[in-house]
Image 1 (cartoon, rainbow, N blue to C red):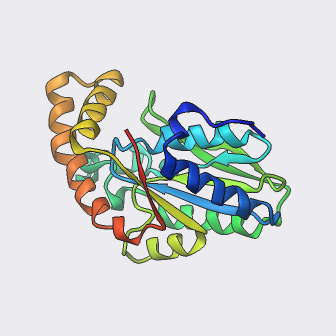
Image 2: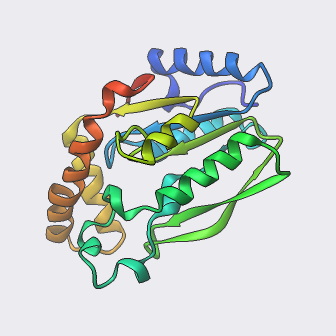
Length: 216
């Protein structure tokens, strides 16, 4: 286990949350920790920092984005222009994975990942051995008050909400979209329209989180 936190985890509120998490892990039980927040809030970065802190023998990151519907499913449908919206995910598949991870009765469970460079989920890309006590899953809709998503929340021991300024989120989103191939005007439009429509839903779930994590 890492002896000191990455710089990104040194905020006092984050330090306190991590200390409490360490205490819960001392029981030996598996913990499923959800990290949520709006697009561009830093969920993946925070999850990666936690993984670095605890180390690969203690933690694994399983992103909700591995359950994006494939492009072959959404091409030619209205969903294509709303990719990333709550109904463009295989929530039933995600729930089934979380249930398997919570049971901890298989020697290893394989989870999908999402590869931005090809804009597609890739099956069986992440191995989760039964010996790993902390499963960190990050995604937009972990607290959504929608059918099936409510069951997703019930599988998670805690959910932490990433609190990031809207201006910073938008800047990150535009830069991300440009990095992965959009021209800047298209990136700005997608971030301001599609991403922000999703953000309004996600921000409405903030009060249901176990912790709100200040993040920049």
